Image (cartoon, rainbow, N blue to C red):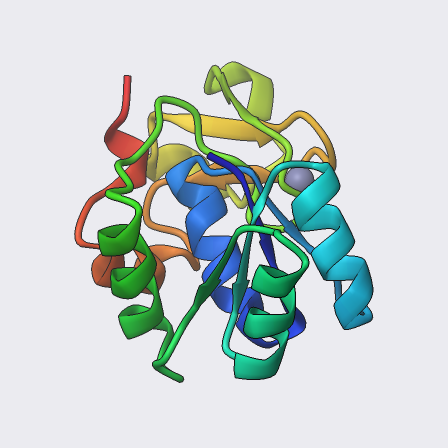
Length: 153
Ligand SMILES: [Zn+2]
């Protein structure tokens, strides 16, 4: 199950990626382009725009209309509608590439020293190279998600 998120739900897209779902997101995109991507790439279009939603359905694309404006609620809506579960591999919140577990030695000098001393497990994005660790700026996200995406195998 893969998604394409419209420009209004960028934060939700990042959360879904950390959960491990493949979510395309564009900072700006025409409605027709989003519908085209959903259809051609077999993705579910996530949107808050009722008109875009009905246009997508009319074009025979898969779409889901989100009603809440709050990210936590949006996440709940999508999680429930599609019975989403954390996938074995998280994806980069920024670029959607898969994260690979890396050893502590590999990130020596690449993360702040206090982080290196405090954390044991690190991930690196195979796309942009960004390094993730448990309890980072993603902490707030993790709290709202109701599970710790860093505790996967
Ligand atoms: Zn990345």
